[in-house]
Image (tube, rainbow, N blue to C red; front, top):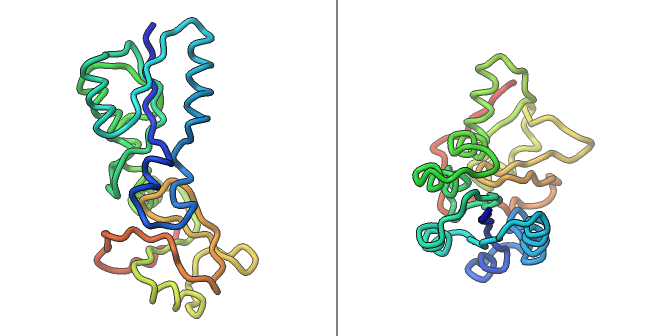
Length: 189
């Protein structure tokens, strides 16, 4: 069986951006892709490294695999970036591992996920959307601050899959450059 591996490498993305060193922690290393490829090949399968972005599109159209092991995070600062690869695979009728495009798109947009879960009757911790640095500066003085863990709070950027512990004395470094949500939303679970 020819198994494709879709992924996005830290080194390819980090070279294009002027962001903090750990901004690409959710993306993969060459060592991770090597290890996956060895594991898949050890089971007697042919491995096709698809990568991500334009390279993925070119390879998937010319070297059609039987199945894709998808760990791609997607490219850009889009609400549905993690759904990019599964969407293409579904369009081409190629089976793949992981969640479907709808699940990935909803779960990457954290405020939308919280609304859906809360509307389904699941109790969630208090939360709020932070739209600007001034919102962060004023957060510690507000009585409706998010759930506290000691003296720190837990920040989760809306379009990033990993959470970031925040000390309120530190400035907010992880914010999408090109995205503004029209207003601040205070939510209770």
